[in-house]
Amino acid sequence: MAESSKARWLVPFGQMPPARQLLLVWLSFMLPVAVWAIVSYVPFVWHPLVKISDPGGVAYFSRDGLIERAVFQRENAKMAEAGKPLATGTPANPIFLPAPHEVAVAFYKAFTTEPRRKGEKWLHESLWQSIQIIFWGFTISSILGVPLGILCGSFPFFSKLTEPFVDFTRYMPAPAFGALAVAILGIYDPPKIAIIVIGTFFQQVLVIANTTRKIDTALVEASQTLGANRRQILFRVIVPGISVDLYNDMRILLGWAWTYLIVAEYIGASSGITYFINQQAKYRIYDNVFAAIIMIGILGFTTDRILDWIGKQIFPWQKTAKPGLIRAIALARQRRKMEAAA
Amino acid sequence: MSALQLPSYLDQSPAVAERFAKLKQRPVILETKKLTKTFPSHTTLNEISLQVHRRELLCVVGPSGCGKSTFIRIVAGLETLTSGEVLVEGRPVTGPGSDRGMVFQGYTLFPWLTVKKNVMFGLQVGGKSAYEAEGDAREWINLVGLSKFENAYPHELSGGMKQRVAIARALANRPRILLMDEPYGALDPTTRCRMQSYLMQIWRQVDVTILFVTHDLDEAVLLADRILVLGTNPSRILEVIEVPVPRPRSVEQLMTPEFLATKHRVEELIHGPDDAEPAVLPKMRLTTVGDDVE
Image 1 (spheres, rainbow over the protein chains, first blue to last red):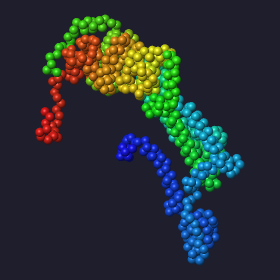
Image 2 (spheres, chains in turn brown, yellow):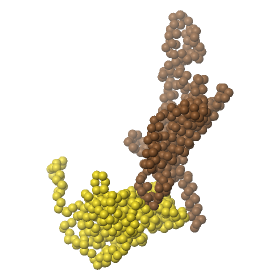
Image 3 (cartoon, helix red, strand yellow):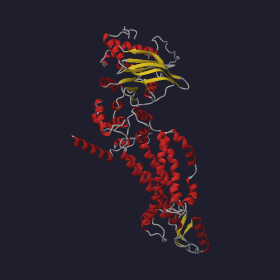
Image 4 (cartoon, rainbow over the protein chains, first blue to last red):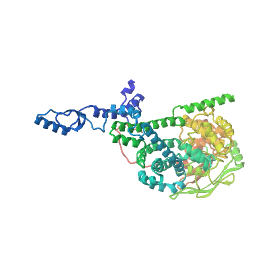
């Protein structure tokens, strides 16, 4: 500890003791929350409104109403001139900026409060609907995009045949296809899935083609001198050779698919988490709006962490791989086999 | 060098002469006929004609840019030739194949496969069952002394161990020719020395002809039956030297007269004669008086 406390914090490409890393990771979340808390809880920071606790003589002030500070002061000046009782109140933030504790409560309440209107969905139902849209959109895109990307990266034939068009289409924003998707696929889930597919697929082909091209060609040459044919090069060298990078690409692409979700859900009959957010905003329950937005973040982040962990388990040949579960199982099986043979 | 009285590198002891006579009796495994490779801007290889006999170890040396790597890659079938012909056991080379195994300078083990699976690769793509391939692979791993590491991944091995696995992987296919493109270039001198004796040991036990590209002249003289010396602009054969150092070879021979004479000759061919004019450097003094080094 003595050594690490002496070490400098800012070293280009430097190593950092794990305790410090953990501290910084924690701070990366805590700093924004701290800013939010300061704005919410310290009365003289921002707080452009006044929450009325006693309307006094002002006719149009009401208890718990929010009034701009300038208006509040002007009315009070008038009251003082007229000799009427003054209005009192406390500094407040606009309704669209709830305090952290209010959002924290909303996290719980949003899941337990019944929807206001019949037919509206609960928060967890909305989330589940969104997850399904993402899942199908990403799966369909990947079924087409991954093989095509690998082929483009491996064979100039496929690259020249498809990539220019893919590159061209990539610049058309996926939401631009919204009206078309609704006309063809109706107003429910299919057009939303289609938007996610369009948003993901074209990027996917290009990203994966590039990843495939980055494979160490010496490995391909080595396999050729070992007698591998084209098919074997593709399936026994290129595919496993890029698998780690491919897996990481897919993680990033899944993130992109999430960004298309909100737009996709606006199309046709609004649904899922987007519908939930809009409804809550209409009811002016901004605590729930925040809770829902943060929920999306948590979902995406957790998914990514889980995928990262799985990645370390299934690619045991990586230098960064932890002595993973799957490898431990594989080695144990091998040992048992050898013992049985002996 | 000139201070030493060296014998001619052409003098061969009777034992060595007999060995070469026998070697030339053996069938030709690799033959290149007027092999030429032209790039748009320059000619890399110009009419290289050569015969390599069965179980010969031929080293290829030359200054950088002489096309020695291109030469071996053309033999491997990884690069095309502009004109001429490469024949392996009389059949022209049209592309890479398992009859010519190759060991590269960079470590080209498949990082996602264990040592054993790496050695099994060539056997399996060649159509052997996993069971058969595993048995064969074990033997080859044993031959290069890495049985303890058969389940390790390449990133867990040292550079020398990786190259031993690469040799085992190439030999497991039972190639007629083993092509080695500066295989020990990235290794430290100690490891390199050990790898050289490994290679000679393996070569004694396996029926394989070796083509070995290197820029280390000691390595070339120590390993080779014959040394192919290439020159630049355009690349051509300067000389094919029959190394007069008797076998079995060992590091002790690095200082024998035959060894030094051969090495001197190769050096002369590559760098030009000793009395070439030294480059004239601009005169500049950045030192203080009294600290002269010469």
